[in-house]
Image 1: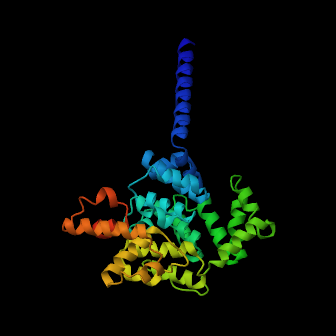
Image 2: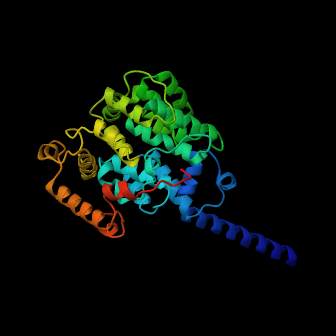
Image 3: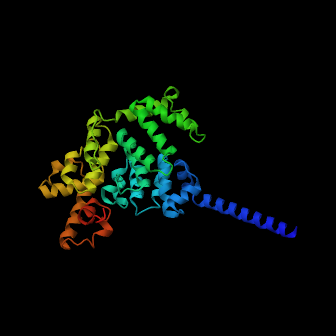
Length: 352
C-alpha cells in the first residue's frame, strides 16, 4: 500500500509539472499556439513541424496571426521587435501602408530590397513565407494573386487546411462575386466553433452595411481584365491595378517604392504622379534623377513638389559626397535614412 501511495504521488507530481510546463509554454508562446490553430493542427504536431518556438519565430508568427485578423497596430508593434528578417520587413511595410505611410517610413527600417515588399513565392520558399504572401495582394486588390497564394499556403500547410487559408479563399471569392465558391469555404468554417461567427456575418444574405461597403471598396480595386501573372511581374501587375483604378494610392505607393528599392529611377519617374501621392522619399529620389539629367530647375522643383528643405539637404549630401570622393563614412549619421544614402550605398545580398 505504501509503495502504491508513493507511486500515485509521483504520478500526480509529474502530471502537475507537465500541466505547469504547458501553461508556461502557452504563456510564453501564445502566437505559436494561435498560428498552429489557424493551420488546424495541435501543439504537439506544430512542434514536430516547426520545432520548439523561440523569440524569433514567435514574433514572425505573431505578425502573421495579427495580419490575418487585420489588427494592423498589433502588427506594427510586433514588427518593431524584428529588424533583420524579410517577413518582419514585409509586415512592417504592409502595416504602414494600411495607414498610408509606406513611403514616409520605408527607410526607417531594414529593407532587403524589393523582398521586403513582396515575399517570393517559388520552389525555394518556405511554407510559412508562402502562407504570408497573400496578405499584401489582398490589401492591394489583386484577388487572383491573393487566392493563388492562399491556395498554395493551404497546399503546403501541415494539415493541408486551416482557417487562415479558408477565410482568405472565402473573402477573395466574395469580392470577385463568385458566391458559389465562397459558400463552399464558408460552409466549412461554419462547422468550426472558432470560425462560425466570422463565417455567419460573411454569408451574402447576412451582410451589414459596413461589410458591404468594405466589399465594394475591394471590388473597386479589381483589375478590369484578366491577365496571366508571372512570379517576377510585380511592376506590371501593379500597373494593371492602377490602370483599372488610378485612385488606388496603396498600389501606387507600392509601385513607386518597388521602383526605388530596385534603384530603377527611370521607372520611378514614369510611374510617379505627384498630384496623387507625395513623400519626402519621392522628393529625394527625384533630385537624384534631375541632377543626373540636368533638370535642376525651379519649374521641376515646383512640379515634383520638392521643398526647399529637401533641396538644401541634397546639396549638403552632394558636397560631402564629392569632398570624400564617394566615401559614405561621413554621411551615415546625418543621411543614413535618406534615399540618397540607400541609392549609393545599399548593396544587394548575393544570396538574394
